[in-house]
Amino acid sequence: MTSRVGRLWIRRTGPAYDVMFAPTGNGECHIATAAGLRAFLWEATISAARIDEALDALRTDTEHEIRNVVLTLERMSKLGL
Image (tube, rainbow, N blue to C red; front, side, top):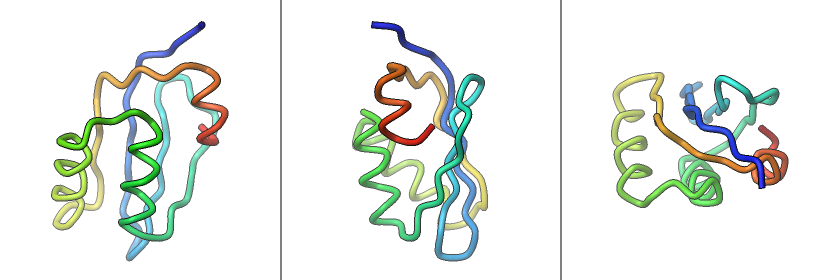
């Protein structure tokens, strides 16, 4: 199964979030809430510790990256990335 290594780039836009996978993702997901972002990241196989780190950072910063993310092409498609 083909996988891609990259980073998830998250931007906080008020109460909502935009998520993009780089360098090979073609989509950007809009997520309405922090709970939705948590569920999305969990579906992207991000560990609970890294999810907590991202959500904590996004409380004060408008952008955050989760580096060294490995996603299969199937999972990227499922997530809309």
